[in-house]
Amino acid sequence: MPFSLSGFPAVTTTKAAHLYLYPHRRYHPRAQPTRVFLPCVVYRLSSNGLHSIRAMAEVETQTAAPSLSTGGMQALISLSDKRDLAFLANGLQALGYSIVSTGGTASALEQAGVSVTKVEEITHFPEMLDGRVKTLHPNIHGGILARRDHGHHMEALNKHGIGTLDIVVVNLYPFYEKVTSASGIRFEDGVENIDIGGPTLIRAAAKNHKDVLVVVDHKDYPALLEFLQGKNDDQQFRRKLAWKAFQHVASYDSAVSEWLWKQSEGGNTFPPSFTVPMSLKSTLRYGENPHQKAAFYDDKSLSLVNAGGIATAIQYHGKEMSYNNYLDADAAWNCVSEFKRPTCVIVKHTNPCGVASQQDILEAYRLAVKGDPVSAFGGIVAFNTTVDEDLAKEIREFRSPTDGETRMFYEIVVAPKYTEKGLEILRGKSKTLRILEAKKSGKGMLSLRQVGGGWLAQDSDDLTPEDIKFNVVSERVPQEDELSDAEFAWLCVKHVKSNAIVIAKNNRMLGMGSGQPNRLESLRIAFRKAGEEAKGAALASDAFFPFAWNDAVEEACQNGIGVIAEPGGSIRDKDAVDCCNKYGVSLLFTNVRHFRH
View 1 (cartoon, rainbow, N blue to C red):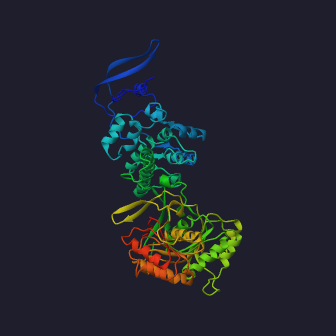
View 2 (cartoon, rainbow, N blue to C red):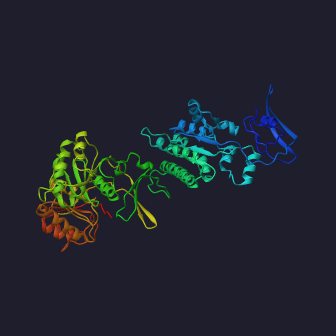
View 3 (cartoon, rainbow, N blue to C red):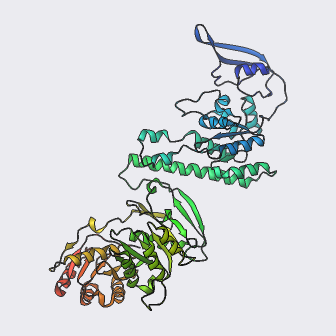
C-alpha cells in the first residue's frame, strides 16, 4: 500500500493507473504535456519486508481539455464542542454537500447515521503524534486557500488532484475550560490542550472567505443553512463569519498567551504586551448621556474566572441595566464587599452616601439611609448578607427620614443571595427596580483605565484595616471604640472620590465630602452632613493634610472630632501633630493613601 508520493506530480494515462498510486483520491482529468518523465518512489510489501523501488516511467497522457472543476461541494467539520452537529451535517447533506471530518467528530457523525469521509482519506496520511497532526496537509489547506477566480490556483489543484473545500466548520480544544477548572491542570496537560490545527483551518478559511464559508459557533448553523438555500451569494454574510472566526482565534490565543505568561512570569503583573478578550453582553440604551451610544462587555480574561463582581451578576427583575447603573452598582458592590459584619451601602453617582455595619441588618439599612436620605433617594442599595422576607419588607416600606412619609425609591438592590419570599416582596416594590445577585469581587485584579491614546494599568486597591497599622503619633491615645471608628471611616473613605473625607461613629458613616479640588472644602461638606453627631467621632482622609493650622486639621479639632486617621507624608506633618496635641485629639498615621479619581 503506498504511503506517500513526495514532491512529484501524479501523472498517469488512465484512471486505473491514477488510482493505483492514489487509491483514495478522486480522479480529475487534466491537461498535461504529451510526453513526460515521472520520477517516483513506490513502496511495496514482499516476503522480504518493505522495499523501495525507484522507477522511471515514460507515460503517455491524455489530451483532455483543461478543467477547473474539482468535484462536488464539500464541507470540512472538526469540532470539540459537538452541539447540534447532527443537525448541521444532515442539513448540509440535504443540500448536496459531502462531509469530510476528523477523529471524534467523524465517529460522532457515523453514529448519527451521517455519511462521512475521514480526513486521512483525503491526505493519504494517518493521524499522528497523538493527534497533533491531522489536517496540516496541502490536500486540506490547498482545497481551502485556493481562489476560485484565479485560474492558476485551480490548475494547481487539478495538477495535484486536490478537491476544493467550500465550508469549514471548526471550534477549538477547550483550553480555556481546562486551564480554569477547579481541579487545576499540570503545565504539560495545559500545553497539550493548545489547539494548532484548528486555528490554522479557521484562519485559512476566513482569509479565503470569498470562496469558503467558515463557522466557529454552533449558534450560526441555522443561518448558514438558510444562506446556502438562498440564491444570492451575500459577501457581507461571508465577511461577518470571517470576522467572527478571526475574533474567535484571537480570543483563544489571548487566553493561551495569558496562561503562558503566568506560568513563566507569575510574579510580574505587567507583561510587555497583552490582549483583553471581551464578549458583548448587551447593547445599552445609551451611555453616560442620552446622545452617547454604549454597550456592555464581559471580560473573558483567565484572571477573572470566578472572580465575581457586577459583570457576572444575575438580574432577577426590573428594567435593563444602563451605563450609569453598571458604574453605580459596581461602586456599591465593591464597597459593601469589603466589610465583614452585616453591612448596607447606598451609592449615588459612584460615591457611598450611606454606610452602616450592625449585627442587625435591618438596623444597618435604616442607619445607612439616615446618613444622607436626600442622596439615598434614587440610589443603589447593596448588602453583604442574604435579603430575606423581613429585610425585603423593610426596603419596600421604609419611609424617608426627611418627611417620614415618602417611601424610599431605589434604582438597584444588589446582594449575594435572596430568599424566595424576599425576592417575591422586592419584585412587588416596583416594576422598574433592578434586583441583582452578585458574587463577592475577587482580590488581586488588574485595574485598567483608558486615557487618550493609551491605557493605565494598576493593581486593585485591596488593602483593608487588617493589612495596615494605625500608628499613634499624638500624645492622646485613642480608646478602643475610637480606634474601631477610625478603621471604619478609613475603609469608607477608600471608596469615596478624592479629595475625600469621611466622618463615622459606631460603625456608621455620618457624613462625607467628595470630589472637591481642595481637602478643606470636602471636610466642610462632611461636617455639614454629620451635624452635631460629629462630636467625638472619627475622621478619615484619603490623603495627607498639606496644612494644619487655620486649615482642615484645626477646623476638624475645633468641630469636636475625637480621632483623625490620615496617611501622613506631608512636610508639615509635625504641624498636624502639634495641632492635635493642642486640642487633645488623637492622630493616627496609616502610611497608606487612598486616592480615587
